[in-house]
Each structure stands twice: as structure tokens, then as C-alpha cells.
Image 1 (tube, rainbow, N blue to C red):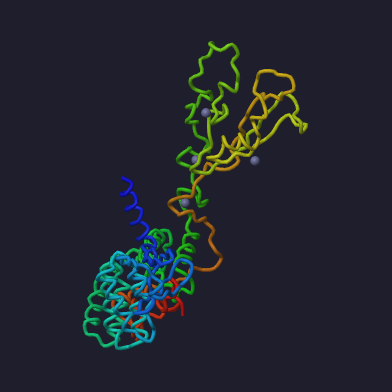
Image 2 (spheres, rainbow, N blue to C red; image 1 turned 30 degrees about the vertical axis):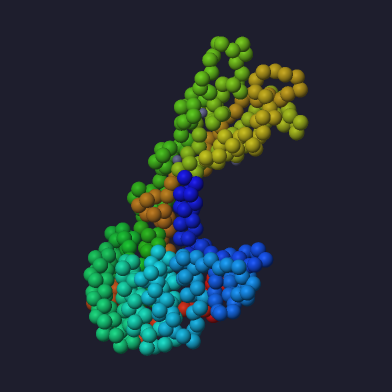
Length: 436
Ligand SMILES: [Zn+2]
Ligand SMILES: [Zn+2]
Ligand SMILES: [Zn+2]
Ligand SMILES: [Zn+2]
């Protein structure tokens, strides 16, 4: 049982720490008894170099009693990455190839992206193969647009296979986008025709990240801002333009029946009549303090609770008010007012007693953001609708779907053979991180 747990735990560690390495360690035992665990970086006839969590050290072979090497692929990957040298770009491609074959469970696609683009950026003759490898992996992982961009870079490096895969992937992409972008295109037509109420729901149904990319330049603002601008010009019927509707959970009251006492206000299980003295503190529901209701969490309601004592306390006050927020009401009452400092009803000399607890009407809550207008208030700007912007976005989307543009609007790779962004923060792997 214990062994099984350890194995499971180990597997988790390997998965989580994979890129950083060191999860399953190599071990060096010296003749003087000292032991070092880490990753063996280099081994020669005379010496062994090991990187531990604290330092990198070299030991002469004649100092060493034994060496245990981990079989793990994590250590293997770590070694491969550490030995990468920008002067040998083919090593990056080899490591990428190894990853897709042997180390599948070890890497996230960002690592493969970096390795393939590093190889392509250092040696143009490796670009075609690197980008094909990356593109195929991206395609397998469902990132069709990114895959098409890799294939396009392979094609830029004179790969016929890259060109064929680019065109095939693009055709599939455009087919999907034609469906995904139908509603926003209709919405843009309606904006141009001046019918904003019908345009809005169609514009809000975009669902394609490419629209954000395509629309930014023609609009001089983000697609989201454009849609929000249209929304603020449309009076929403369900909420009357206020962007808020009555909370469905509490029907707008901000309070719901206390589910501890089921709205009775008293503690269950108390046998009335059996006890000599029936104390308020023994019978009152400790979730709602006798209020029979609690604040609605759905609309984040708030209210003040007024506590009256039968005499003044040491602060000279005979009442206190606690501001309560939904979900923390009993805690608020218990801690803020220190109810334990007070007794409840039975008289004892020198004590201050709680005479009553009264919750005031809610000061906040009862309303939730309107789902129809997505919580955007009716507040039409003085400026006219950007109809020209809408026309330009429509033209750009249609051109993209037809595959027009000197460099394809979808691909945006120009004549590059590698992705600059993927290698921007370095291609050397030192002490578990990428550096320039
Ligand atoms: Zn509510
Ligand atoms: Zn209650
Ligand atoms: Zn208050
Ligand atoms: Zn609304």
C-alpha cells in the first residue's frame, strides 16, 4: 500500500517537474561516505560532473565509490537540453525529434516550438524539417492555425510537403471559419444597415479568436470594445437598460430562508418544557441568530444587524451594529460583536445581556448582472457608430475567407522561416531555465 502511494506520488512529481528536471536523480556516493543526488551532466575517463539542487560539482573518479544513474527520461531530457549549443543547431532538431518519439509525456508544446524554431533560426537548411515536425505535432494537438503557420514557414524554406500541408490545413481552417464567422458577418451587415438591436446578439456570438486579430487594425480598437460600444447603444428589454435583473435565487429580496433552522429561527432538538430555564442562547439558531433568514450569496447581499443589550457595556454602549456580508453572516456576528462576551437572557450580576437581535433590510444585493445584455448598461455615446470600421472588418474577414492577400491574412508569417516570438527569450538552457 505504502509502496503504491509512493509510486503514484512519484509519477505526479515527474509530470509536474518534468521541464525542470531533477525529479528522478542520479546519485554519486564518494569513498568518504558523502552522497550527492542530482543530474550527471558529464562523465569522462577521469571525472564526473553532477548538478545538484545547490551546486554543480566535479569529482575525480578515484574519489568515487559508486555512481547510480537514473533511467528516467526526465533526467535524459534535462541532459539533452543542458547540452544544447547554439553553434550546433542540428542538436535542437535532434532533441525535438527525440521528444516527439520518446519523450511524448514529458513536454508541453511550447518546448517543441522553441526547439524547432531555434534550429530553424540558426540554420535555414534545417527550417523545412523543423517546421514540418512542429506543424504535424500542432495539428495532432488540434492547434490548426498554429500548424498552418508552421507549414507556411516550411514552405517558405522551399518544402513542397510544407506547401501542400499549408494549403490543406488552410482549406480546413477556412471551412470552419466560414461557419464560425457567419453570425458576426451578419451582425456587421446589420450594423451597416443601422439595425443595432438585431446586430448585437450576432456580434456577441463570435467564437473565433481570429476575429480579434483581424478586426484590431480596421477598427482602431479591439473587437470587444467595438461590440461593447454597440451594446451600450441598445436598450435591453429584460433589464430596462440597467444591466441588472432581479436575482433569481432570492427573487430580488437579497435574503433566503435560513437552511439551518429551516426558517424557524430556533435551534433544533431543544426539548421545550423539560429544562428548568429556557435560555435564548440555547434555543436560538446559531446560523441566523433568530432572524430566520440569511443573506443571498448569489447576489452578494449585505445588511446591518442591530444588537440591543439590556444595559450599557464597558464601552458605555447599549447596542452595536454589525455590517454583514453574504456567506459570512454568522462569523461576522460572532467575531465582530464578540457575542461570547455577552450573555443572552438569564440575569447575572455584572453581565451585559443581549435583549434582542434585529436584522435591518438589505443595503446591497437582490440584483444580478443581466444575461441578455451581458451586464452592459444602456448608455449611448454621443459619437456616431463606427460604420466605416464595420465595413472594413467585413471586407477583411471576407478577404481572409477567400484566401486573398499578398501574404495570407490568416497566416501572417510573411516570408519568415521561423517564429521570432518562440525564441525571443533565449535558446540556451542553463540551470533549468532558458536564457539568451
Ligand atoms: Zn439573491
Ligand atoms: Zn436559522
Ligand atoms: Zn453597514
Ligand atoms: Zn439587460
